[in-house]
Image (tube, rainbow, N blue to C red; front, side):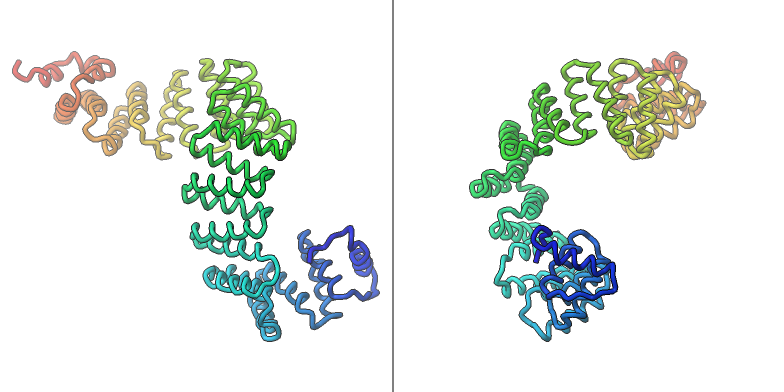
Length: 462
């Protein structure tokens, strides 16, 4: 029922001309079906509705035109109206497969996926035509139910009926990937390629499975076959570039990414990866040029700003690094990695208050690494915030109990705060856990280290 403008231009032109006048012209029901199908494919619902109304005025008994009305009802979420019309049609044509398909569509909209599957299976029994689409619809219903094995089976059945249904192919591979069945996916894709050896999509998906298994050489070969099948397939060049990076073949990776850029508008991902490849090759000027191209292409790509930040950190140009990490944080202020970089850069620059805020935000966002707690504590000590430092460590000790690095710091802090009992308690704990870390007190609290308090704990008999 697909409308082909080159074969049916006259009915469409005549229909659109009729809409501009008050004249009502006659069309046979098949012409109306083609016109409606054409408008629905284009998403021109209002024109499709006009064609349905006029079509039913001229052919009131046409089941196909009524089914188009059902389709529009479902699209507009008028499920009760759609259901009522389908019930009427079922009485007239109980063996019309399209009625079951539309009924299943309504049930799916109502999240009654098991019932929808039953009706689609009935439609397959009644169908004399190609059933590939029906298997694909059943597969989608099983996906809604998270029944990936059943979904996979039906997408495979769809592909058996129609090798060129790439939507089913993608969905089938998705099921294999979700089930972590990469070996099985490879086995199926090889069988599929025996039947359809020039399917660039299948070669591409095969390469991704080899990549997941870290079989990079076979992945490259698969992407090469995808490119042989379609030398304008941008996705294959991108994926091949990623694999070549893993193999440390950076010049070839740059070539692959560059080819993708020549085939369509530049993508920020490809520009970013080329920058990283140049960085690995020691081409620092070229690397930063591509990082700048990345953020020029997509100013909201925070990864681009972070790449520039890390580049300047490696160059020890911390002022520029700070400028660019601020841009990344402005784009994604909830990214824990960015705040940690912010803290580290400010720390290097000696901006201790800003560094402390960066590490505090890092902790608030869920980064509970020991080093984050300890670094923030040491900064708080340097800026004279002993109470905040103690509170920070008491939080840390919940995640890292019996940790000498925490205990030595608490001992020094409590001694500075003149809480000798607590200081002694934590110093004894620290010495039990790991006495080698005594240098922490020597470095952070030199006066405490020289005091009789430490000597007494270290040598209680003296």
